[in-house]
Amino acid sequence: MKMNLRGGWVLIISTWQMWLQHRSFFFLLAFGWMIPPLISLFVWYTVSGTHAIAGMTQSEFVAYYLFFMLVNQLTYSQTNWTMGDAIRSGFMNLLLLRPLHPFFHAISTEVAGKVVYMLFVIPVVILLAPILHPSLHTTLYQVLLFIPALLLAWLLRFFWGFWLALLAFWASRADALLAIQDALILLLAGQVAPIAVLPAPLALLAQLLPFRYMISFPIEVLMGNLSLTALLEGFAQQIGWLCFTLLLFLVVWRNGLRHYSAIGG
Amino acid sequence: MYYLRLIKLFIQVSLQEEMAYRVNFFITLLYSLLNLAIGILSVVVIFTQVNSIHGWNFSSTLALLGTYLILGAIRAIVFGPSFDKLVGIDGEVWTGQLDYTLSRPAPMQLLASARHWRFLPIIDLLIGTGVTCAAIFQLKNGMSIGHILAFLCALIIGITILYALLLFFASLVFWSPGLLATRVFDGVFQMARYPLGLYPGWVRFALTWIIPVGIITTLPAEALVGMLSPLTLLLSTVGAGIFVIAVSLFFQMGLRHYASASS
Image 1 (cartoon, each protein chain N blue to C red):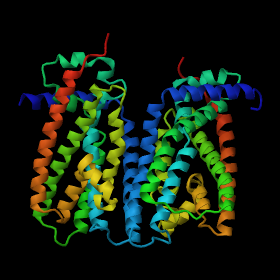
Image 2: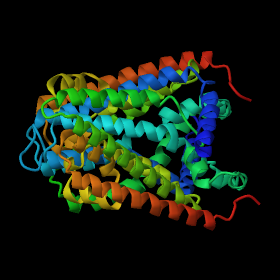
Image 3: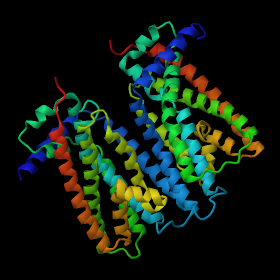
Image 4: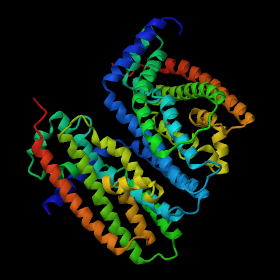
């Protein structure tokens, strides 16, 4: 995988340029993904209008959801869909013939996508902030912790999406699984409500499953609501789930490739 | 009568198309049930924190969720696929196929709005009806036949406004074929999943007067709970009527603006 980094870089740049050409379409996608957290933001803004909910004030809810939109978009894994499609359509053949690991193809669409989506999401968040008055009491120390948490969250969501997409090697349609995954993220990664606001059984489930560590956890770190033990536990869970997911990815990749018998011309 | 016969034919043809993919049924069922679970859990999460907001409590919000599922299903059964065929990616306006459709001996607005049908979303229609019924049982005190009749009236108003909105966004294609305005509406439509009372004032205003997506579910749910005055119901009927006529004129205007895409 380490060979030909220069080729990988060229691929990233060319994909990025291709994506910028079609940016209005991707802005539309970004708009669609932004709506659900925006709805939650509005609802919790109204609910917390008179008194704090589970220790969170109105302006803290606003800050939480504005960051949620950013982190959600930054960690969103398109590989979920594009890799599955590549396997189904036979485009995978072309990827395998390239003197680069197909991994680079996934990374290049990820990076290209992030830049294009951010061009849309950041202005919207900046526009919403003065209307809704977020409040954030963050320290340099929390920002410094936020960066690794965000990076781990992205890696986790990326490889988690990757291994799920690779199931397309066996079932030519893994879309139903992806839909389930998206629904779980909606509920357990802090989109419907921040984890602290969820009823106890759901909150416990959120802490055990990997989804919280894909979006919510970095934001919780940044907002500074976590105790030292909760912080350490969170990072441990993130790293643990990442290792597990990497292992899963490698196993599925090896076996899948052996099983793969080039669909399409 | 001729139009009804035409619609019946459209339904038959669509049904034959859909029966070709039977595995899809189970996937759609699974997805619908999941959607239902998330929808109900979201409402539960809100109302474990507060008892009521701006007059909305758990049961009335549940009634609204049922209405949302019903309207979403109606949209997915007929208006969605029909408009998608017209203005979606590779739609008729885009490919120039519309030239042939225009030459058919039936009104263009009917062809545009009711030619293609999907049947799997009937699952959502049943689920939505179930949720609404569950909410009715929860709301047992003060529930009367009058409320249910008012609910049905308000539901028809909701469908009318939904149709007018979809037609409006679809008509925009005649001016800008690449706009994909219907996709923008997909996002905005999700706003109807919660009552207007759960949104901040300016959002409520926008969803009532600018893009009246909020009304289409809030009105029926309010009728069911008895929060809707007869005067509001009457005024919304008139309003919805004017709206759908105005949008139809707008669609005709767009059609005249259409200058074929084929070479």
